[in-house]
Length: 500
Image 1 (cartoon, rainbow, N blue to C red):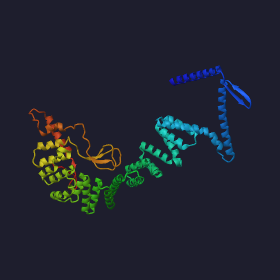
Image 2: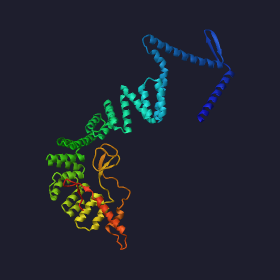
Image 3: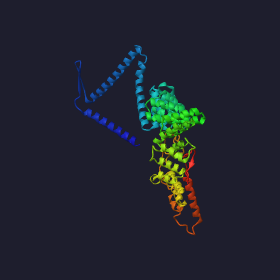
Image 4: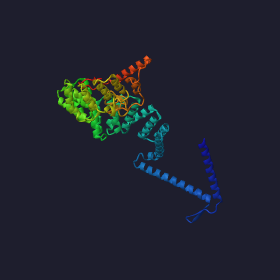
């Protein structure tokens, strides 16, 4: 309504200005005098203005006639498209104007407007590669997936726009959750343009999700060749894929290939903990304990981990606790101050029933970096040294309020996994699991530190105390023992529980 009023006001203003100008010219004196071939022509002010306008129109008409004559001359000399180009020039101008307006609407987020401009441009232009691309993207923006897919299929038919069409349909299938079709389209798009970085990333993720480890390794190599991956990142991810491939071979029962695949995965990335463990098991099956020990020692020197300790124990499963302590010195000397090393040594001494040495090995870990595992070990040490049940239960109760320690956590979505996997179970990201401690919850756990005085018995039990309170206290103790009684890496090769 406001815009219509503005247009009316502007129209009236223009008419008023023109009327005032015409009146001014009629009242003005003088004019233009032109002498042509000895004849003098005099024009008044208004006549002069009209003459100038007619002259400009005449020049414009002459230019048009001249260009038409040039086009006709070219046509007569064999250029069969000269006349058609002359008459289509205006249509092309309108078409490119519509195309430009459509691109501006697309950039502004106006999907429906962009589709209308694309249809107008398609009417005037004979350039389906441009107009179809604009139509497809505008349809996607407007939420018309059917129209978008239909237009992308038209792009696939043209060799020059085939990659754009395949990629567009691939993205639509991904959005719809049709990963099977999306994988086939990603393979086709990557074959058409192997240097396209985004397509390579999508193909790698889809191949990993489908557990096509061999195909994923080929895609990864192509990305390295095209310069889309740093060499160290490629080496790490190739090791992850090789490890996943080795696991599949293990499940198939082909022992020789499994051993070779596990060793290859460890060679590619010695610090990859699951690869080191699998390679060690392969060497043990080949009766090569020295090779297995060497692999585990190298991985431990980079990042101590309970699975490495369990695999190292499996190198000599029948040794006595004292013999095991002596052999493990080679493993633990590389990272003596690491919390994992200190807890491992404490476990070894507990198994040897040397509780004072187990306490010395654990040191101040329960104060400086307490975890459920270290606190449970302290409870086992107290029990071994003959401490009262109150003290032992106090340590077990404390395990409820401390961190559970490092776990396999996705760097992308922070989902916690029970064991290492190449792909996150939650967000499906590839190679994002890291061994680290999750942040402590801000919500207090039931039966945590608030129940500690009741558990350790610092509050006297009055003779008239409610029996239900005693039952609740015993339940808290059982919960503490259940939560802190988590299985730790078995130093005899199998899983064991902390002795308490």
